[in-house]
Image (cartoon, rainbow, N blue to C red; front, side):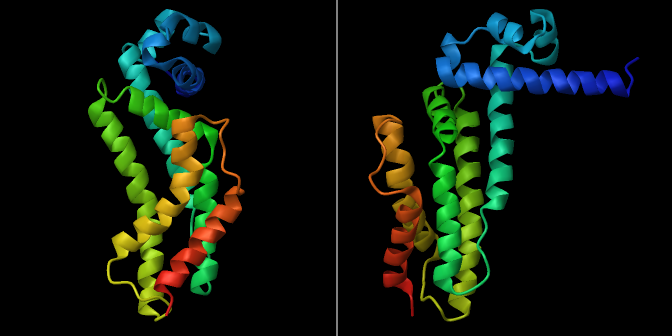
Length: 205
């Protein structure tokens, strides 16, 4: 029979394993990662790791789910401040650009894309979750600003996609394709500000 301290110990071990497994998977990919080194780095036996995770596929799925929960926490901080349209959208854009420019975010996306044939459903859930969470925050703000008469937008989803796309392309997709050493000449905050200015030129009343 397990007591509270046993459960706490198991939770602690699980978190440690997930942290080291995330590092291994993002560095070496799924095929290149091995259970034994992950267990050793985590300070547990291989038997303990298998007791907590039913094989490498289950461990990989748990790593992605753990990363998604981390993203959820970060996304909740990506909110629009109250105020005029330009101020609100700039607050969102800077926070979103900072999130998308994080090298760890790219490493997880690379990992999910690389393993998509093996974990198709997991990959699609991961991408859909991120896009819908961020897009939802932005669309709520655009809807309110349109109702207040500050913006004139007929298709909220299109407008949200345009603003997010102007940020994603330079800070996320280009480094994703060309490598983290190739970064945009403009700073991340400036990219966000420029995107909002372009957006306001199109939609401001």
